[in-house]
Length: 199
Image (cartoon, rainbow, N blue to C red; front, top):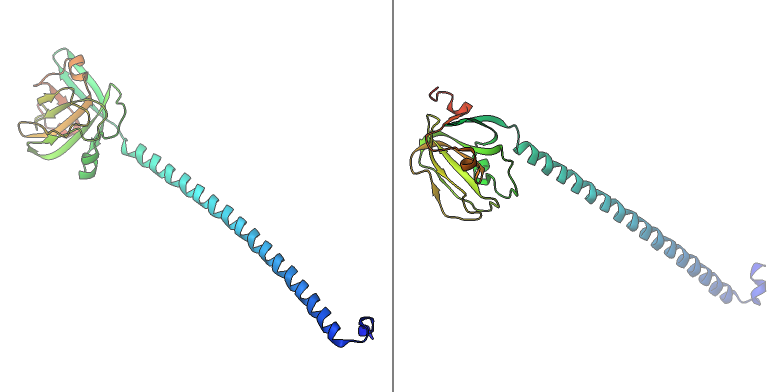
């Protein structure tokens, strides 16, 4: 009989069987733990990969949004006493676009800018909150004539910069450009917004 090697004591067979069973269960438990740990590591890798992918997609969307927010550029010409000056400008039409404006920009090309458009003439107020670079602000009347120029506005200032008179647009360009290009109050701005401006 198989149990004879245990001196004919069935209880010792039971103990041996229990020991064997415990050993097998222990091995299975260890195997299960290792398997779960393996799955956990794999799951962690998968989650890490998903997070990286999400970051890539997010940054891509932000970059695309940023690029689209700055395009397309519209040609704009200012007729000065010494001749026409050409710009290519971004357009801020919506409340959100106008609230953000040129905030957080660290530079502005010499021949570019941003124009803020309004449907009806009104006294407009601007400020320089979160704006890192000095700007020249050209307040433009409905007929396309520059009504006022605020030169070299102070970065980060929250002081109100008023048009002083009803206007329908404000053009922001790099600080000092108006003086350098000979742009003065009374000069004519040619832009689709002023389609009916004097010729």
